[in-house]
View 1 (cartoon, rainbow, N blue to C red):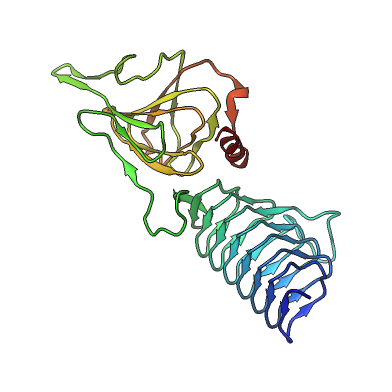
View 2: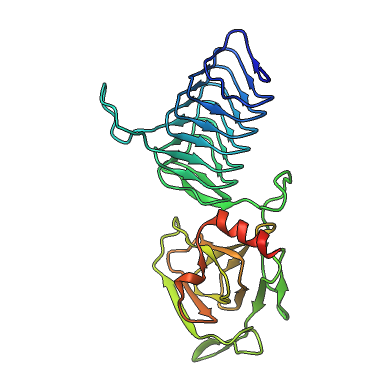
Length: 313
């Protein structure tokens, strides 16, 4: 064996990677598959139909039931609770258990509860005690019962203590942000006794000729929109009433931009992952697009987006 088993552990599986450590009073059933350099702490139970990737940490008091998939570099905090049957009954077993997937690099805080069938996105963070009833997007930070998105983590440096910055526009000129190609534009506002007017024109603050616009409104603040990238499309976003935040991410860098005034717009170029969230109850988001609607221009899966970005590089 090229892995460590504590004398008080019961390890029945032979499919365990090099350098993995299984500590006291853990029980690993025969069908479980565990990768390299994992750390399985005291009082962990791992069932048969479980696949665990490399460099996964499972802290004390966790039961990993049939159907759970933990990808590489996942952290499972103490007493996290997984489920695998949406309608459990004593002595009644489904033909197959619902699959729950924790994507690469995600972390689950102590005492979090994960509903069967949920996918926790890459690098996402689930707060301690959260009850996750829906899929969690990549890089999202969720807390509460039921879990709601509180924010997004930066993708540039997971070891940094710095929180994602929130960009604002300079009064006179566009501001670049840490995501290449994304710019925040100041927009003029003309006010008199009759009211106020704001505008943008091609060749000025509007960096492309739009062929379409759409408006997003009546979105509850707890919900998110976007969660995709475009292959060719440019977008220009202005929150004409209320406020919302826009997360932009090129796979290496990310930044959160606050839109809380018609005096500010953001240009999102192609091949940038974008999410809009933290909508105020009165928010009205106006979006100009460089082309008509084309479903084939969307990249809706974050892992596919990362693969596409790597190919383009």
